[in-house]
Image (cartoon, rainbow over all chains, first blue to last red; front, side, top):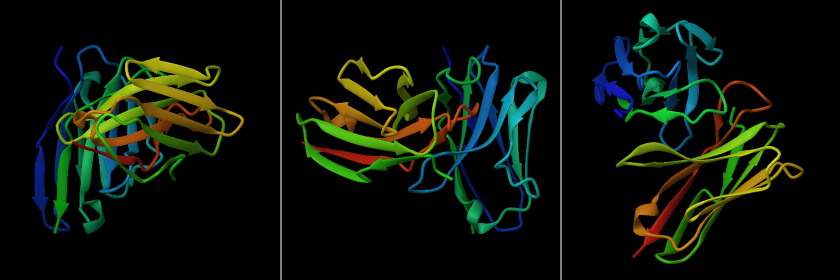
Length: 114
Length: 111
């Protein structure tokens, strides 16, 4: 079974530029998550999708971050414009359903904002 | 805000020894999960324990949950070099449909 795919793996941008991350979840997984993990901390949930719909985006900085899940499969997370404090690893995860289903994580995208 | 807080923040032991990590949380939970993160395999689910369970085992892993103290522990027995990783507890933060992760314990197994 293929795992959660993410791209790119690394990205370096200057502040005020925009960036987009892509995630392809495990086939058949209805729930998709985007997390932000700052160095030395645990992952923080940014947004959770159930199929096409948003379940939770309470911690998504909506003035600069946006996310969509097309046709309930792939998802993109965009930051525009980026700030220095957005430097982090962005993790995508998927699960069969919401809690307490186990979440499967992708390798992450390491973003550096200079 | 972080729901779970792991203790210690860092732990270094010799191969073959047992490693114990603790997690404390603030609000009531329905379940608590432990995850491992290393550079090779990313973040991987280890074990889930429900609020009505007190102990669960999976291979060399033993997890306990004390809801009266709002705490959990993860024991890794007979540690191996491959166990070197960061370990995170995650809870559903009072029944919310999302996981809230702690800061993690960084475990180093010395050969």
